[in-house]
Structure formats: C-alpha cells, structure tokens
Length: 232
Image 1 (cartoon, rainbow, N blue to C red):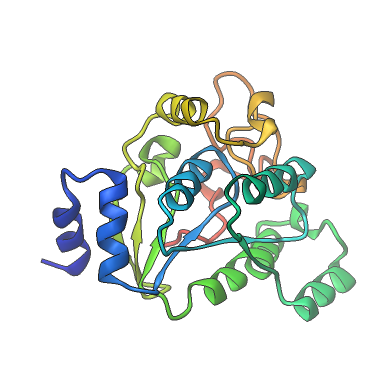
Image 2: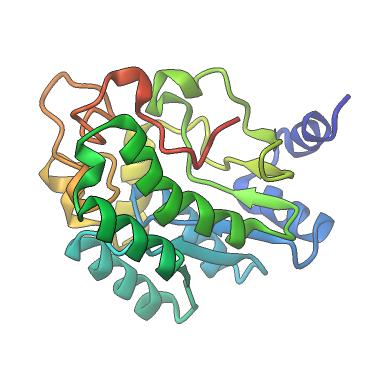
C-alpha cells in the first residue's frame, strides 16, 4: 500500500477536524493550505482558523484578481485575525512577458495562456509548496469531469508531497449550507453566476446549463481548462 492510500485509510470515518488534527501531528510544520477565497476554500479556512490548527494558509496573488476577491480576502483576515500569506509572481518574468506580448496575450493562444498561468500561478505555487509534506485543497469531486477519478488523499508527483481534499465528497449545496450556518464571508461574485473564480480577465459568469468551469478560459476548448496547479 502506498503512503497516500495508507493515510486515506487512517482518516476513514474521521471528521474533517479530526483528520486535519491527525495530519498536522503526522507532518508537523509541513502542512499548507492554498486558498483562492472561493466557496470551498472559505469552508476550509474557517475550519483551520476556528480550530487554531498549525497550518500555513496561503494564496497566489496573480495581480489580476477581481476587486471582490480582495474584499473577501480582507474580510477573512478581519474575521479570524490570522494571516493569509501572499505569493506573488516573479517580477522580471511578468515584465518580460507583458513587455514583449502585451497585457492580454493569453487570449491569443493556448500556449500564451499557459505561459501566463505558469508565471502568475504555477511558479509561485511551487515556491509556496517547497519543503512541505502535505498540501490541503478545496477540490470537490463533482467540480469537473477530470477530477471524478481522484481520491481524497493523493500523491502529487510534480510537487513531491501528499494532497488532501477535506471536502472532496461534499455537494455544492452542503458547501453553501455550511457557509450560511457559520456566517462565513464569501465572494459576492458567487451570487452573480460565478461558481469558479480566478483572474478577472479569464473568468466570466456561467450560463444556465453550462459546466461548472465553463466560465474559466471560456475561449478555449473544454478539455484544456486546467491551468497546471493540479496537474498529476
């Protein structure tokens, strides 16, 4: 049995709080949580901060976020009194890309869009994860087709650490109910048809009947919708 499967077996039947408590004890000082301040991430932030768990919470400050995202970021810090560590892209890499290709090159080709995601998101993420043993995420199984075959605990070969998705089996209705019950601040764009919120130029509202992530990089083919943060 691989270690991720072993961990998955160990937390079977435990609550999220109990699972996280066990994991922070198993990997002391080496557990991190990445938040983009969406519904799911706000649920997990609430659990971590309310239980004062020794987990470093961080976000990727791409420089292209919605004003509403900054609003909920501020509200989260105010409510819990805990830091959310910001990781910025490499300044020289951004300057070079924008200077040579312009500020909206990501619309021109998949290659350009992946370059922008790589600079603004993937490289900062690797810095945030470096030296850690467990990465907590807000991924849910029903969010997109290519995530349905995942497990709640996985090994991330690219970043050389385990990944834990605490609310992997939750429905969106469960997420919303938990937020309402606990009065958790959330991004007001969710109420305007934005189920998945990333960079402002690359995110639009989803129309009725569209896929959960149809509003992300909407000008591209559906099978190219990942940015590289959760590549296997």
